[in-house]
Amino acid sequence: MATKSTLRAINIGLTDSEREGVINLLNVALSDGYLLLIKTKKYHWDVVGPQFLTLHQLWEEQYQMLSESIDEYAERVRMLGGYPVGTAAGFLQYTTLTEDAGDILSATDMVARLVADHEQIIRNLRSAVDQCSDDFHDEGTTDFLTGKMEAHEAMAWMLRSFIEGEAVKPNGQIPSANAVAIPAGV
Image (cartoon, rainbow, N blue to C red; front, side):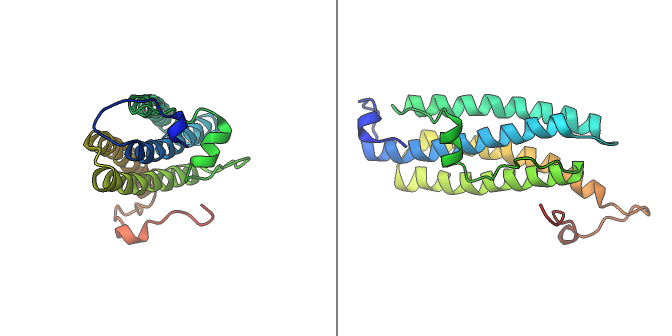
């Protein structure tokens, strides 16, 4: 995404190549966050059933957090002299997530898809943290991305807890962690 011709000239102790690498990582994270925001908002609108109020409120909190996070990614790109992805086509080009175009899912399947997306983002951010530190020598962005990873871990944990709660047996026994899986087709 970022090329030398689109980078502003700044002197912050990183080479143009290092800044380009970091900006590309940030634009992927921004695009993933934007698509996850769209999915979370869509599920917030579509959820039905006995879990409606709980999930409707949880997803409202999460999409508000995601919206703030997206803005912070874009601002970080600008701090490094680049330009953030800012179009639907750009987001779809850079995201590592997939759309749920036209899918109307059960509440549990919605939660499972969001868990899978958060976990994908967490894995991506772990890799980006390593690259920012080892390859691009940008400890500021390393710290920034670590905080984002922790936020996604918390959101995934809340969602995962919902799915695990669905698996509790009527006698109160909880199946092993390996027995709780994302439903088929998700």
